[in-house]
Length: 183
DNA sequence: ACGATGATGAAC
DNA sequence: TTCATCATCGTA
Image (tube, rainbow, N blue to C red; front, side, top):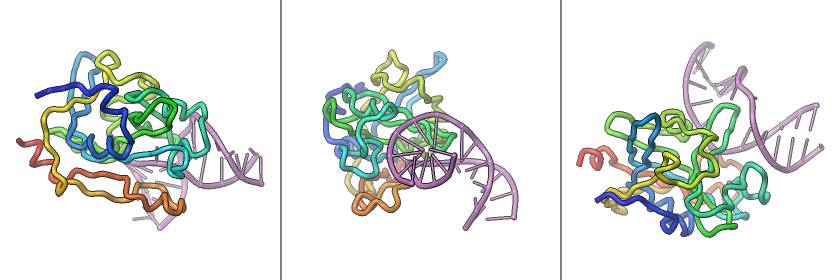
């Protein structure tokens, strides 16, 4: 079973999409080579009120892709060094996205949002594009069933001093991914 | 545990 | 103009 996920998958609340992305595959085609990576860690960012989100102060030049159609790729540069990959969710004009924080292949374990973008050669050239084979980046459902007991939820990383928004358990981690990869 | 990295947007 | 940020690596 191999199904490319389209806008309909992403046209749901970011919290739902973040959970549902665990066990799906992020597929990258670059230089004629295609590689698939199991998504093992995500975080959701939801609406204007979310004080952990780039959209917390409204639309800006940088965060504009968050307001675009679901399935849009939002890549931003931070700390002067790192590219972050986000997949836009929910309806158009509502700022919501899922940050992809970790992926794994049979060879590599890319734990950390900047590690995976470096390894997959993801940078601003993908920003604002729709996930698609044409863009060279898409998501596939390959039939992996993720059970509730294999999912850990924690507060999001790197969001200090934001009150209740710091505590929201909006980070999702797939446990025991090694077992799933070996299947 | 801390400094370097050096884009972006907001606070001052 | 200065500061914090959805981090990581090297050095201590």
